[in-house]
Image (cartoon, rainbow over all chains, first blue to last red; front, top):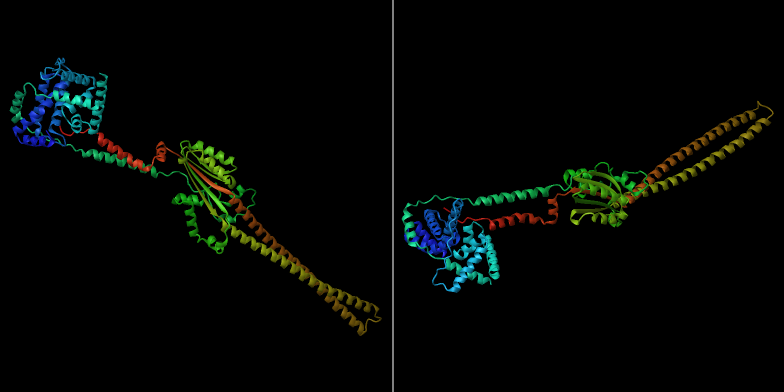
Length: 176
Length: 411
């Protein structure tokens, strides 16, 4: 969904249009949920965080100002904050067992499965910072500007960070 | 390979995007909560404050730079010690060019008019001379410039000024003193402290080029500013020549006068002596006639006595005349000798001044100032000034590009 389409829906949602909000939810949730699952590595926890994220977003919807980025970027930033809140709280609790990687996609061929395992292996070898920027770029489908807004950095820095993360991932890929 | 990793990640991202298991339930739950949510207050942030801060910082940097640029280069005057035409009054016998320099110019123990006036007004030495000429009506220049246009002679007096910047002021000042003395120069004034140093000196003109070359090698080029000023002392030279010619003419005239006095005296004395000889001869004849006269009561005898008395009176008169003539010639000789002596003295003064001027031309009057330079000053020497304006701007642009940005307020 383009920026303009998203903004049109957000404007409608801000006026209480539930259909617009539902459309936004349906469009963004796969990316957002994928991001949360990949970040938290726990499906139930991801669902909880997804719910919290949306609740916070809906509560703060009237004060959302696009400022050149999509609504989804705002949601990703909220989700990131929710994750960090969870990690802060979880620091005093025993860690949840990590869900095994979901490779149960029946449609996936053996080759696709191997590719998925390889990619996740590469990502795990990268630093959390590199993982985060690649996650936002390729899973969240955010632009550099949006990624920068989510991470609270300059777009130029986001671009450089992504470039370096890709370079490191490329090295790991070549090595493997 | 680049596209391969990107494609790999793109496919991985696409595969990872899916709806949660309880998607619909979650959606319903959210919509159920929707009416309960209250719009939050907008939190305003004034991002322009960063512009204000950056602007203030920029102004501060510029003020500091401007302040440093406005600092006087040296606490001491930069103008070479006294120069000009006032030295022509000097008539002290001189033995070497350096003494001539000292005699011909203002005493170097104290600051010259140029220095004081220049320090007070900030004018250079040439400006000071122009001002002084204006104040004095430029008498010397205009008087002797009447037919000077055809006189192409040059008597160039060199004034030299060097401004050093150094981190070790005292060490450099001592080294320069050694160099000046090594070249046969004389230091007239030296003021040295840890921040500033000032040296006034005199050097023979012949080795001035070598001296300059040597001191230029002491510090890097950017740390030395040299200035050389040459002034043609032709007006002074012409004044001296005019005075010499005048006194020579006076001496010649006095010699002619002396010859005429002697000649007139000889003529007058010869005339008086002849008169006296005639009187003596006549007197001897009268005395003989008186002696030979048999009677003393005769009229003839009385006549002889009267004649002898007349002749004696005449002899006394001419003797007085001769004595007067001798006294007059003596007085005239004394007066003539006095005038000759005076003229010779004037001539000698003129010749001495001429020698002093030539000796003056044969020397260089120099002044060296040394200022301690800060590390920032060294940077300023090598970095073009616009960089100091550019740096804050570049820093500001970089900061603007790389600063963290929060595109939106998070709940």
